[in-house]
Amino acid sequence: MLDVAATSKPRIAISACLSGHSVRYNGGHKASELCREQLEQHFDWLPVCPEVAIGLGVPRDPIRLVGDPDHPAVVSTRNPGMDLTGPLRSYGEQMANELNDICGYIFMQKSPSCGLARVKVYQDNGHPAPQGGTGVYAGAFCALRPDLPVEEEGRLHDPVLRENFISRVYAYADWQHLLSEGLSRGALVRFHSRYKYLLMANNPHAYRQLGRLLGSMSRDDDPQVIGPRYFSALMQALRRCASRGTHGNVLQHLSGYFKGALTQQDKAELAHIIDQYQQGFVPLVVPLTLLKHYLRKHPDPYLLQQAYLQPHPDSLGLRNAV
Image (cartoon, rainbow, N blue to C red; front, side, top):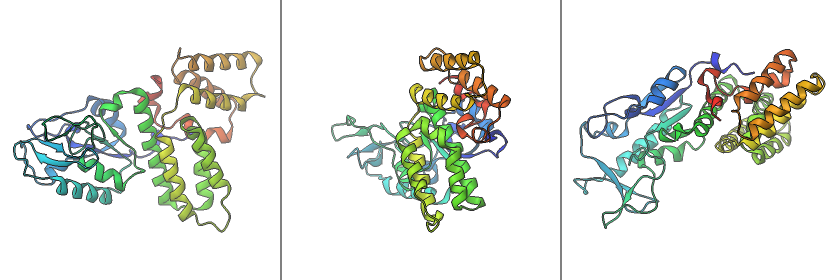
């Protein structure tokens, strides 16, 4: 299994107010207990406040989105003639080009600069449009970094979304490590082999597509060309959250590796535990713990390398609640 706990901390950009910096319009912050108490020991935070970065003071007049929800402008609520759209968009593009060492980004929800979705966009009648928008800084940043794992802090309180986001952060970090060592045809195939079952759990259709992409790769194909295509498709596929059904399918595949090693009683117990998980009676950590127990007793080199078995440090406890 991948020893993700022994790797260096992945660096994650985070809205500065979430990390406890007093940079909000009212001089306060929105310190995230989840980020500061549960995640901080595992990640290296990079706090960013685009509003302060473009020269707005603390405290300051609040800002809001106005106009077309698909292409909103950012203005001061007390001085609508003060259009901040251009500076915030430019700073988002600048950061997207400069922050090459991050493996994820956690944004402040509902923010006209940093919100990823459902941000209020006010109309001429003074009411927000039914359709929400995206913060201008976040929109500009994400447009240039489509493969980077991003999420809003509020959504991370959902255990399934949290586990999915952090799995993607570690996958991104793993790919960055691979690139630093040199991308070869063999390295690309080995990387895909490690992520086979994680991909199968999140997106079975993409699992088959990416398998065909690499399976059709010839000796003449340049890994420097195919590699980025593969990784972009992988990161998009992993955005889809695994379900109990797809996890159960993967667990059954993994249990098949022990067919010749387990007693009938052991097989029946493992099948029962997987069924209990699929029915929602136990969390994912229960069947995984039993599978890892059998893997220690009956080591299999192919299974031992699988990212699915440990996509993030066990100490995060992410699979105790999914």
